Image: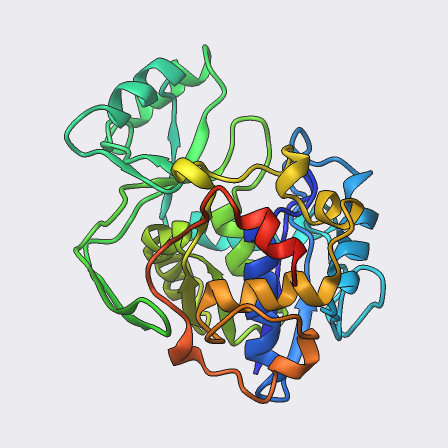
Length: 319
């Protein structure tokens, strides 16, 4: 087994990120596998270099270590996406050679209108209605004179079916999610393409991540298939919401690992609390991460989202 945690240093780790990291680490350590830390910093505007060392420090503080990563090296370097563009370019060229990508000239306004149309949204944004897919070569040449296009993957007319280790059996109809961008107009390869190329190159066999990415998984499976790559096994774990159902933010210091550390919370307390939130233990108790390895079972992970009540910090402080 080879698993990974692949955070984006756009802020400090919040407790939802910490829970995902802990579960991914436990899954691999319970099977004597190799755990990889990969930094997803391909999108320069979102990447904040100053957060990276803090992120590593927070993970080590929680008791989470890795066999390969940006600070320890390994057999499949580099471990930051911004240095791996050669692989993305080769994968894109393969898709292009098969006629599976096409230029998209749609404006932000047009894309926004698709998000409120009946075809709706997936985790990565509006479902594209395919309006640029069948433009003639002449129309493409004319539009290219006015606008630099993004390039979309032409989703095949077949469905996707897989069994998620947490969410269960999943069936998605043909063309699920619509054609999606693999190469942006600003010259940056998309997350969907990069994550597939990186996981395959690093030999990742098991991907555990947040439930918010479940409905975009078919997009990655389409890419795995067309690139002739083996599809890893997926596990999508529930998200953690704050009081009132709010999503946690890396910019909210009160819910970040760094903020909790500075408030005097012990790592054993946070790990034990996270384990309880995930359904791994019956009640929250202080425990070191390594002491959860022997008792870890995927089937114990709860499927429903976790919503914290207004007293969750006080409870954590008492552990």
